[in-house]
Amino acid sequence: SPIWDTSLNGLSLLESGLTLNDNAIQKACKWLGKKQILKIKGDWIVNNKNLLPGGWASQYKNDFYPDVDDTAVVAMFLDRAGYQNKKILEKACNWIVGMQSENGGWGAFDKNNTFYYLNNIPFADHGALLDPPTADVSARCVSMLSQIDKKNYKNVIQKGVSFLKNKQEKDGSWYGSWG
Image 1 (cartoon, rainbow, N blue to C red):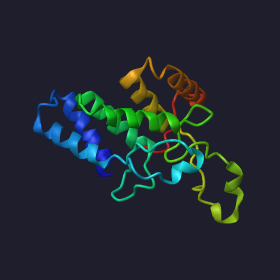
Image 2 (cartoon, rainbow, N blue to C red; image 1 turned 60 degrees about the horizontal axis):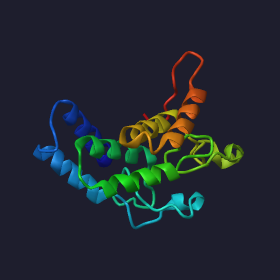
Image 3 (spheres, one colour; image 1 turned 90 degrees about the vertical axis):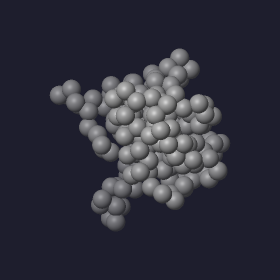
């Protein structure tokens, strides 16, 4: 996705030594800032009646389905770049916090979408009716909140860390659903 790719490319350029003074970083920050979804309360509102928008969608013109994963990576890039529009980061963090499931983890698009009995419906053989919290998405959210304001988000981060510890495989690895 262009949102995901722009954020990861931006992070790699920052890690190589570029700064916000570089034109490539400035352009990426401005472009991403314009893509934040702030006016449409998408599908996620079903489980978050009072949560304000603040995420990014991975595809163009998909404002009803922002995703937690892309939002976390965008916010990490903008913060690390030193992008001065703090409202963007504040809205992203608020949205991410509001999307945390009761078990401490984050799904890609939904909160508390863990009704596993739905997988037993005959036409649900592909298991795509659910959006349960996953270790990979949750790790990015914990990382983002820790990077941006560890003190302010301490309780949310701790719940996320507990989720991640519970999801660790016996061999020490974590299973990633989204990459």
